[in-house]
Image 1 (tube, rainbow, N blue to C red):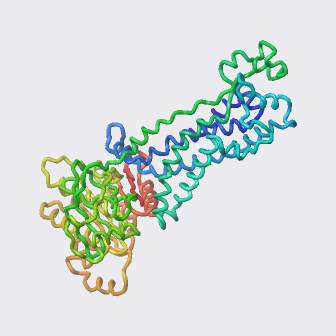
Image 2: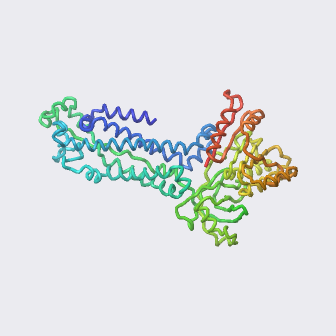
Image 3: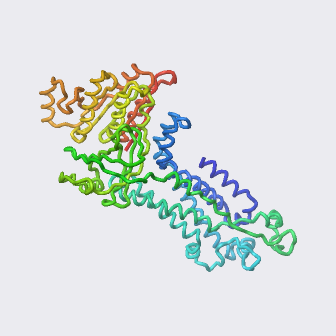
Length: 537
């Protein structure tokens, strides 16, 4: 689409009669500047859509207008957002360079060496009944100072600086090491879009008006410029700038509107020995789905920062919960604010105030749409599956619920299971309840431990024949090392025709799983199909 818009606009400005005189002064850089501007407008319209959480949540839930294949494309919303940003950066560079050349050509058009026609065009606008074409009024004008006093020049500098700060702070290194820098500079998008709306009002590039084209025969008059204002067919040409494109920003801000209404009540705080803070909360009108996430703000820690956390409660419960592990300055400060470090008991009314934005959908919410689902979690990526497994249990216990899902395979890969002991407790509870209900075959789970020391290995070897696993306390024994995905997917393909695969974890493992899904999916749509859904971090 960008290529089409660029080429179409480029040819229009190269061929349109209204810009013949402008092209005489500026040459082909006029078309370069205007074509890149059209692409910039298009990309700036698109860039907010993939990061509109309300919009993506709506599309995930709208099964009528958004099928499974399209919903899986929503997993790539951040990738699409980045691609559009690269498009903005490329077109902005072309636009800036083209206009720098345009300003210099406007300036040289005032010199005697420019030729009589360019001098004639540059001289227009000195009388009251004339309109100017050249914004640089004299050859002695300081072009830099002149441009920086115009609306287009000032807003152009503001937009460029905001864009540079936003993009340079969005690199992987800065996001991982200094998330706050990324967070704050990304909010310069407000400055960027305000500047973008005002930018077109400068009307720096001007063309001949439609009424002037009817009276002024450009084809004839451009070669007979000495007869201007004397011959009836060559009155002085009149010029005006393009009217700015109205960018309906309120549509995007409506889409980006956050769900922060209503008071939030903290009903329970649990500090786990593994260094995990569990918060149970209630909020009037709060409705969630399994696997969804929220954004939390703690004003006593930061007035501006909102951080995402996956909900670990099930929709069937009368509260919603999150599990928070220290993974940076903000979470460390939150731990301290709740007294989790000192393990000091605090009355609920003494706890710091929290604000919630959400909930929002994620890829894992589609687990219930498949007859067979494979859930794979790596490290902290296990949190969304807490909500899903709880919800599965509630649905299985409810005789009135018609459940499409018939079988769940759960894989958990972790380096240190003690950091997620709360989840092992959940699995133990589910294991016990499933056994009581005679549904042992419904959930099949496999835990893989990738990190252990010599003393742990000795302890594991001594208790290998015990009925319960020595690490997790579960009936299902822990595996040591990493899964052989080829073997796992081969067995799945032999037993089931259509399988939904859901992953939450690092990008490197996500790429491996996606390739494995593709390699074991049949070319024939009637054959075995693995439908891959990811929630990478």
